[in-house]
Length: 156
Image (cartoon, rainbow, N blue to C red; front, top):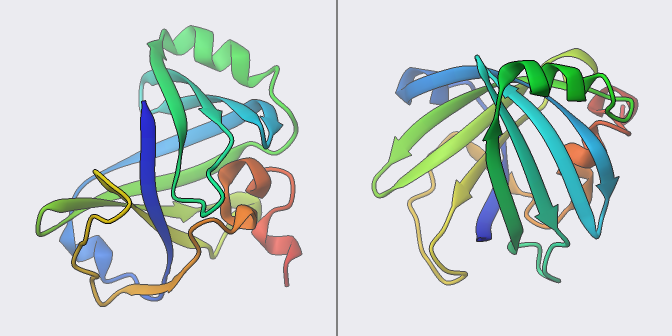
């Protein structure tokens, strides 16, 4: 139940040609406190409830628990979320033995594209595709819970 991942900005849309899957996501936060976030997500026609714990000091890992819930429940819970619903398309891109999840954001976060790769351990190595840019692992401004409160459009 511990998630280990690294996060990167994306410098081109070349990943789209390499994606083997994509889907739309709409998500909100019932709680966005750094110690624990409670997220409601609609992923196509599926509802998900996710609880994440506080990140480790290096930002590489944290507790994560997720459970599928009925779509109608997720839609109702989204109405109770804090301000700042996130809309994005997620692309899945296989690079050697790892799958990158690349999120292209819309709405108030339009123009932001972030890639994450989940790892088996903090020392796990992986091939970096040429469309990756600066690593932002552990930079809390790129956490979805923060993007919902302080969106990308307000950074400029």
